[in-house]
Length: 324
Ligand SMILES: [Zn+2]
Image 1: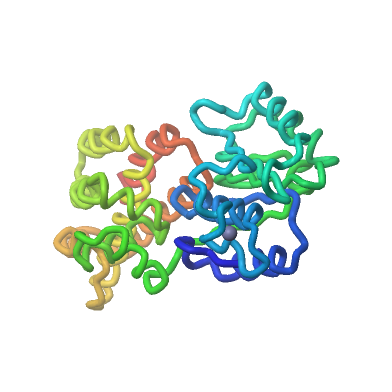
Image 2: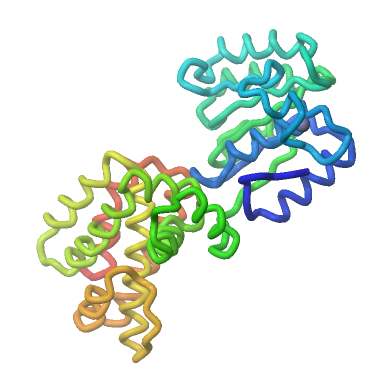
């Protein structure tokens, strides 16, 4: 298989290549991964591979099926005009029984399948139990746990991981040609190696806001009053990407502060002054507690904890760590 702009995730690629190049086409696939992990990009690559006409490596990128902007045998659900309701799933079921127009397969791509209600999932289950031979279902989601066990057990599930800087750099440089190398590197680190987040963060200015907020949060952690922290927390309300970036930025500041307390030098954060100040103000135990709390919150956020719930916990967790 050829993967184009989908970089990293070598084991997933190997598995997919074995299935698809081996001629055994999958019938139902779940792609699980964080926002920006490339779920949608990979789903499109697989969909094109399914409809590509070539006998060689797919998708070839040059046959009529590959170059068509919209392919009649690839149907996408879960977008604004096709929310994953029971009605949409019923329509999907009807469409699935229609033979493909131009290709050997018809692909049904369900984006953000975690948004399906249990009723919609049960409606989908009916067709997954006995899928038409010519259909490939691809479901993308944050976390497979949000899908019914009966759906998961009928799908091949693959998990997308963050991409290392070395693997991501060529694509980031090509997609963001005006951003300096150092900026790309920092954005890659703050957004945890999820390329979609890095690109969006740099393009729409979220990255710059994250840098400012990280400094302000680090300063507010040691304040006696909770007000400054609460005020900053309110600024994260409108965008989960801000929360993701700020948490990782803070983790690096706390880590740097601990390294400095131990007499080390290797600093990674974007706010070295704040790291130094914290290392002078807080004990090593408190810094370690801050790192631990931040990591717990990161795990919760990656597991699709709701941003509002996360925000109610953030300030309390940080203050608890410093003994306020
Ligand atoms: Zn092709």
